[in-house]
Amino acid sequence: VQLQASGGGLVQAGGSLRLSCAASGTTFGYNAVAWYRQAPGTEREVVARFSSDRSINYADAVKGRFTISRDIVKNTLYLQMNNLKPEDTAMYYCNLVKNRREYWGQGTQVTVSS
Image 1 (cartoon, one colour):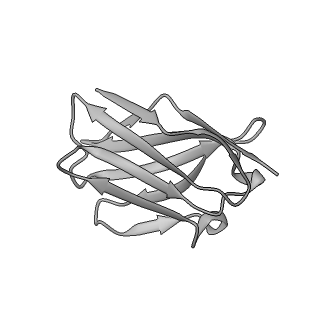
Image 2 (tube, rainbow, N blue to C red; image 1 turned 30 degrees about the vertical axis):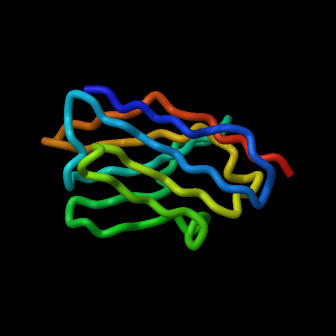
Image 3 (tube, one colour; image 1 turned 45 degrees about the horizontal axis):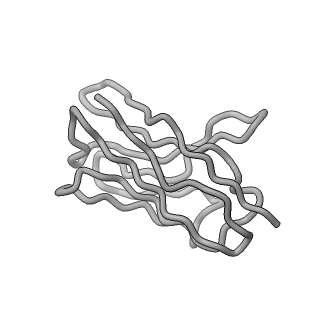
């Protein structure tokens, strides 16, 4: 099972990025999936999550700016990030919980300049 995250980069404050996470060797389906991020010197934190009951939750810091979505046919998870702020700078990871096992992507770096 591999989760391949992409779409990170350097962007100015107020800009947008769209992260993608493609799965191979498994399917996202309607299992619990999420985006996490980790800035240097901090703990990894959840940014946005699809729970197994299909409910969606966002961290307070990104509500109204980030949108999580998934394409079942393409087997890909997305994170649309708008109005980016310097404090959004972090490594972003996709996460899948399936059959009581947890899988992580390799991370994609997002850097927001002021």
